[in-house]
Length: 379
Image 1 (cartoon, helix red, strand yellow):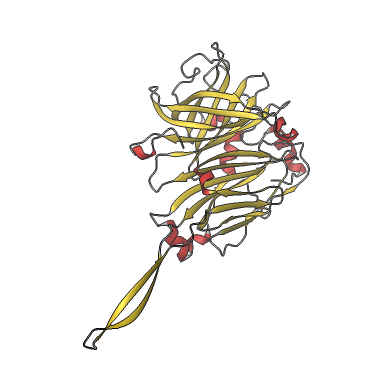
Image 2: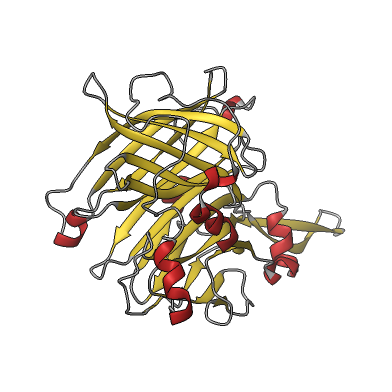
């Protein structure tokens, strides 16, 4: 996204893009309520996307992709293999928050490659037809794309499958003779195991490249700022075929025109499908703690849960100038039912760009469920 035409400029100036607008939040809690149990929020239904046009635009900007690689027999068998490792990666690149002052185009044409396994493209984020697209796929290990950005960002969500390492059986046959000269055939099975080399996933573009290990995909939550104000944000999970509900959320973290600390964004499933929306506020309460409160609703505005927790800045004094400028922090909390019972966890990061109101947050969430093997505090 990318080339701004004159005909769209006025509209884009009025509607700051997805999740990064400076519009004030319209909610049922006062912006400074940091003392009540859930910051003043109530379990009532809301307008779709809290009546926020920018959040609705985000929903429209995320589209499903029918990956033709799924029709390949080797990919189909891998996806349906109950023993295969299963991961999801969401990558976004460009301006994390809409910035109308950016005029230079950045070419993010690149690829994602896995050393062993297969990749399925699940969703495209803000891809513009004819300009941004997935190149023809012929190899399950490789995804290539064309992407250019200016004022905002593009992204892709991927499912990644890793086949189980199986032994290789090499059978040879020979004959043995007994004392009477009679022969019999004997099968000799030689069992070898493939080299168990670490599986790597390589994200490669001209502005930024990185090689990940699968261990990093267990719970990846990373934002990398580049020298030209562009950034790359990664979220990833390790998944099971049957899992407790989990996913991502991302959007704006910053101040409105009145200086109120607010956040709002889009709530995604573990495959980056839009499930709903979230908004809230944060600040220092009377006890001196840095706290946040919010509300999660479905796509049609129905109440899904309260969220609350703590946050803390962590500027890196040893970071380069650009990274220090974008220093942010972490946030961690829980999700609660309308009765105030904890039903899940969330944690993530936010950026706090000096001198700017619009910053960015991204988080991972997980609901508790009956599968006790997936009910730990770590995810």
